[in-house]
Length: 127
Image 1 (cartoon, rainbow, N blue to C red):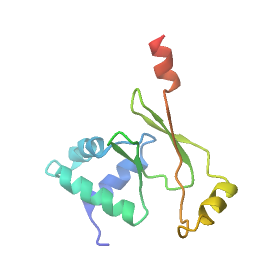
Image 2: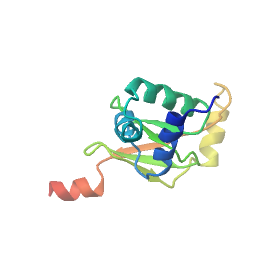
Image 3: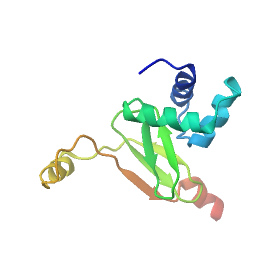
Image 4: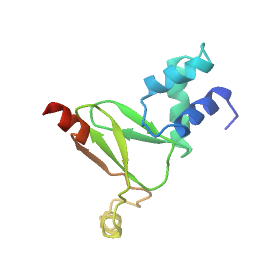
């Protein structure tokens, strides 16, 4: 993979935040440093970063994808009210991984858990 200043800027932004931004939010931030960057370039670079394992893509089921530079084993919590994605320090159990491996579908290389609900802040604001 050739070096790209724009790709490096995308990666640096993702590493600097605990949020799990969408491509549009990443585009807005990277555009401050590279005003001529296109949204398509951001998407292409995110796809490449995901393919090489430097970034995780989190699909929330609502058509929106979020990105995370933390590729360590952890799960995520998605609030269906405010649409935030938050880290959750829960990993799939050995039993779950073994069960998936023995299902006969093929090898298991990774597992991603996404919990969905309404976050504490949204529940409090609704009351």
